[in-house]
Length: 160
Image 1 (cartoon, one colour):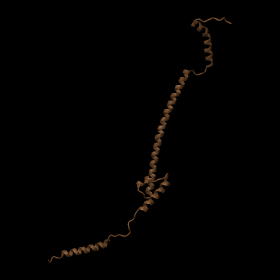
Image 2 (cartoon, helix red, strand yellow; image 1 turned 120 degrees about the vertical axis):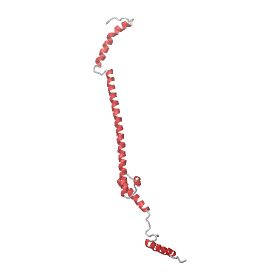
Image 3 (cartoon, one colour; image 1 turned 180 degrees about the vertical axis):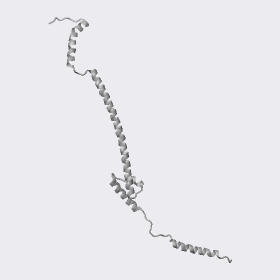
Image 4 (cartoon, one colour; image 1 turned 135 degrees about the vertical axis):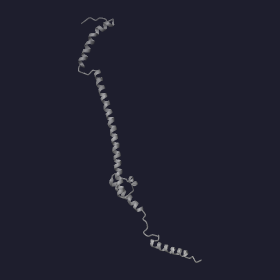
């Protein structure tokens, strides 16, 4: 075994441990050989982060498109519903203003509601009386003729 020497300067210390540090670095290099370096890993992470950002942007655009599509479908469904309610209201004899008041979830329920509403309106509808208090045309002509004769009798009296 080598004899122990006292180390008095930094240079002596560096010289004494340089061989050991070199051996340790080589051992660590062999141990982690084939592994990705931290710098390379940062590049890979940067690539993944940019890909994630692009996918998030694409997902947001898709969500916007789906929201617009859902709004268009809802509007189309409302128009179709209103058209069907109007058709049903007219088929049972209701005014157009009552079409939007029909209740239910489907055409059968709307039709039942429209028929019930039409029945209520028919019951509330007052019909004119069958008889008339007005004079008939023939009676009015006789009465007119009598008045004309009476008025004519005054016009013929020129002897006074």
